Length: 117
Image (cartoon, rainbow, N blue to C red; front, top):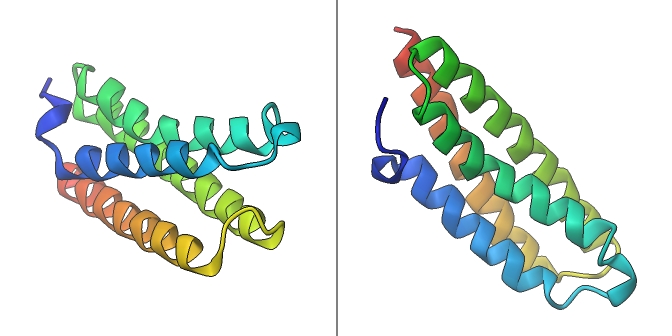
C-alpha cells in the first residue's frame, strides 16, 4: 500500500480533472446530465482508480485499477473530441486537454510496466 499523492501520474490526472470541471462549466445547460456529467465522471475516474489501487494490498490489484484508469483516460479522450465537434470547446482547449491525456496515458503505461517487472 502506498500514498497515491506521491505518484506523479495521480497529480497529473488530478490537475486534468480540475481542468475538465472548469471547462465544462461553460457547456450548455441541456448537457448537464449528458456530456457534462459523462466527461466529469470519466475524468474523475482516472485519479480515483489510481487512489483506490494504491489502497489495495497487492501489485496485481493496483495494476487492475491502473488499467481501469487507462480505460477512463481513453473515454475522456473521446469525450473531448466530441465536445470539440459539438463546438463546446475550441481547438486550443482540445489540444491542451489532449496533450494532458496523452501524457497521463503514457505515465499509466510506464507505471503498469514497472509494476509487472
